[in-house]
Image (cartoon, rainbow, N blue to C red; front, side, top):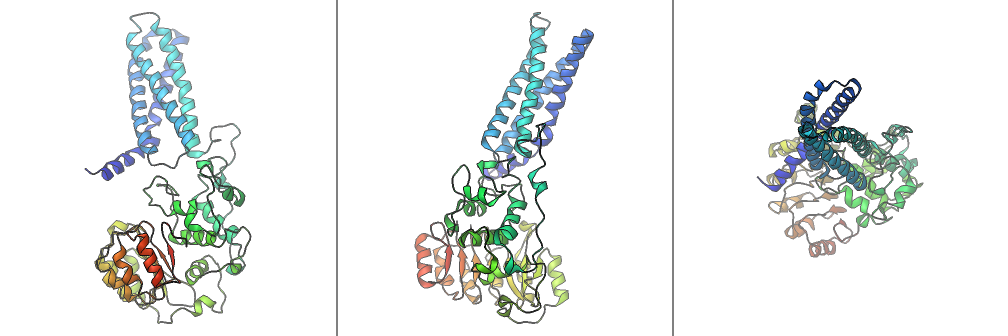
Length: 462
């Protein structure tokens, strides 16, 4: 059993903590009620069932603590709240153990009876305290307060309809709605993880516990950008594992916004946008003008893909959409059950090779054999193959993609051996090499061969 499998297994069991935690809550309360009835009615016959209740409350508390510990290892929680919740849980375990012990000894010495009653009362009180911290961890610090406000995420406005993308305010209309959907649930006034608020521009720029989160015009060195590109299994990844992840397009837009100065009030038209960004932004517009945009005029002209072929590919689990209106070029992404991908599906994409413009196979289990098929997609402009096991075998095939402008090989085993092939992609404008096997020396070599290329790497600015 590998350590990775072991950690995944513990993480899986940890997800049952919210369910199991109700068991000690029920038994401790029931024990408190029984104790209250005994005190009021003087019915000592009920003392017989106390031993069973005290044992189960102790056992369920132990189980709940174990699962809570496994869950906490996934990260994404306010450390101070988490520590308080853990301390309260440990104190509750001590008190429930004391209740069980005094149940065993109450008939030996008379003073064990009041000690037992006091332990029951204290354990019930500690249950409220542990519950308060637990509720604050998952729902915000005001969750169990009398002055509870509506959850921030419920107060957020729905995304505005953007009729003219060029007139849209980059932060207000594009970036903040992304944060609202994916980040604010953990970074609001009620649940301020990392002491970072993301409900307003001012708070976002202010930063959090670790200092500045965004460095305008320097996305590569901005903490926010580094965190959103971390592997989802990394404890520091944003959003944390279990939350709805940012899409590659959303990451690209946030990175682009930061590189353009992280402005609050600039319009899209005031920013420098490459073709890839224009394609992504076009999806945010609810209506498209009848006239072709500058971006669309540059798109290759081709016939429409056969509807029967498209349907068969879509039925295999690939999401395919037109990249914009008034074009037959397609965007293909495999977003579910990525572990079920196989090379035959990559080969199947050759049926739409003349229309395929954007291809996202990130996180899939494609092998190097798939590179042979991908190399035949001559119309491909953007390729996402990050978080895959691809290495240098067959990487020379990628040089056939002479129309490729954007490539993401983040977190792959592609190394410096690929530099010669990558350097032959003369139209390449941007490449992501974070956590690949390409060294800084390799990055410098690639940069010297393609001076206009923007390289996103560990120590290289975009």
